Image 1: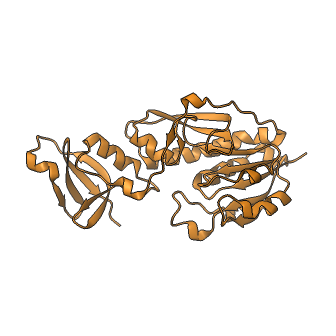
Image 2: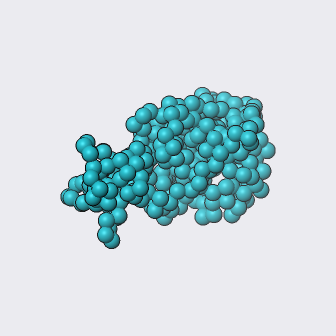
Image 3: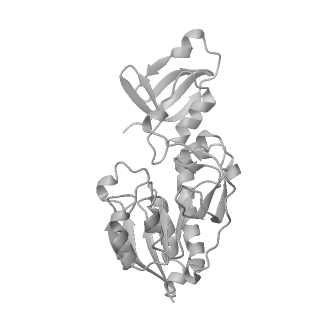
Amino acid sequence: MTARLVLITGHTFGLRAYEGVFASSAYLDGRIEVPLMVGLPEERAAGTVGYAPVAGLAREQGAQFAAAKDGTLRELAPAIRACEPDYLLVVGWSRLVHPEVVDIAPYGGIGMHPTKLPLGRGQAPIPWTVIKGLRSTALSVFFLEPAADTGPVIARYDMEVRARETASSLFHRMAQTHFTAGLELAPALAERRVRGDVQDPAAATRWSRRRPADGRLDHAMTAEEADALVRALLGPYPRAFVSVGDTDYPVRAARLLPGPAGPADARRAEVTATRVFFGCRSGVLELERDLP
């Protein structure tokens, strides 16, 4: 029997994962069917980091499309139930899908998270990976449970985090890995034989939500901390910034000026047309402004 999937995303990562499913032999051979794809309304685009519309992909693949006004998907439960899905795939979705909706699929729901689960459960995994200076990360494929990112791990795709990695470079690499994960998951979905290993709760960590205000650089930071924060907020994320007077200046690069810094440099905040010279614990930073 054909395995039926409902695919849910409003994010680039989900779009790439589902492109992988559609590119698989299991889909091309008719062993997988996708009757419904669920995405975010277009009005949510501006407020969603990494937003991607999925209606076009649904139309291309002959699937119905539904825009979710409620992230828990309870209002779409009748439509999902009518599809009689074997699995729900939920990738890049900022809300927890209600357990009653996940339970519609007899073989469960499956998600993907860009950390080495159980490390880094929670939010803003790519910025936190750069801020924390991690030297490796992963894309984890896992079964959905009522709590976020806690379910058995189905597959893990390990990745090196390079010394000058930015959120932008890691985001694009992760997007490509999502395609691979979708492609390689498809045969097991078609055969309804997806299995996972239970996470070790003793090894779990949880990362908190980040807001735009968390990108503020301050004089108490070291040059290394400021540089990491700037690199962690490139790509689709709200930029790091400095506040000078009543104005916030978004920045895209940080460099510590050579030579000794005097006492007056600790609070330096000088703005030019393309740069901000900003005092920190290590000396004076030359910050490249992120201009429109």
